[in-house]
Image (cartoon, rainbow, N blue to C red; front, side, top):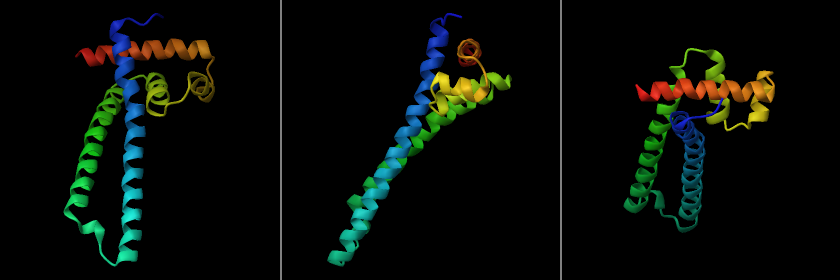
Length: 133
């Protein structure tokens, strides 16, 4: 099955969800590292740098960015949850939320790679129709 423009749009929309998950993880790691660094510095200099207004503002900006990313990811999750066929949902979840390769996802689902590609194309068609509504 050849993907048309609507299916390619759905593919890009869902593909962004995996990248968003990775960006959320990186932002959380960044905050944790910064907090550890400032706590270490606070012990050495005996001053609580985590209470600085500039640091609090920075933390708030990163947390707001994470919330925005989570909302975008949740939209993709909601779209997938609206698909009634369990196989289609699983194909899309493995491909776009878990970032699995087609080969790994096909193996996990016990499908041939060709069957997996066909199911993914059909699932993207259903997702494209839901996006159009």
